[in-house]
Length: 222
Image (cartoon, rainbow, N blue to C red; front, side, top):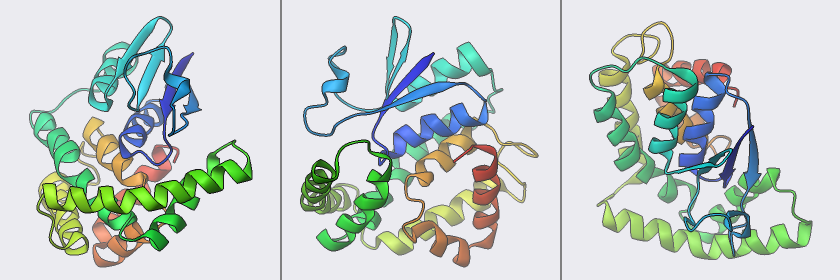
């Protein structure tokens, strides 16, 4: 059985899960403890996601998806796939931290949603959530500065409009009538923000995006 070591809050982990759900690859999930990450003691790589396939260990979301597609799924690539995958990893994902963690209060609230799957005791969850809420707004602000994000809300909306106009191009999915590997990556990264009002607001502003997202959600088991 494949095992995915993850944070439920991690967009790159959701990127892998969306692909596995869509392609019906069975897997187990291990939620990694943010402080100490003792669940990853079997590897020197201390970032999630990490995939364990028997003795094989694969790290980094794009490499994991390639490995899974080559070994278990074999979705056909399209000529522009690499360009869109780079856009997901290097542009789209950077809008999420400033939107999810704009301040301590909002971060604390959203971390509560993200940690709902945790099997830790209530006291430990509270302290992890509090520590995260104190740290993540600073991380988000650094990301804004690094990637020159001036207005996360409007720039995120512009990114989704770019996806709809240039990625979907009046099709149901990037892949046409059915999702492709790129659809799973875009959806997976966005899925990490589900329930926080961010995607719901985007769907109201851009109904085409909303229809695509809900269609992917139904197919990708999220």
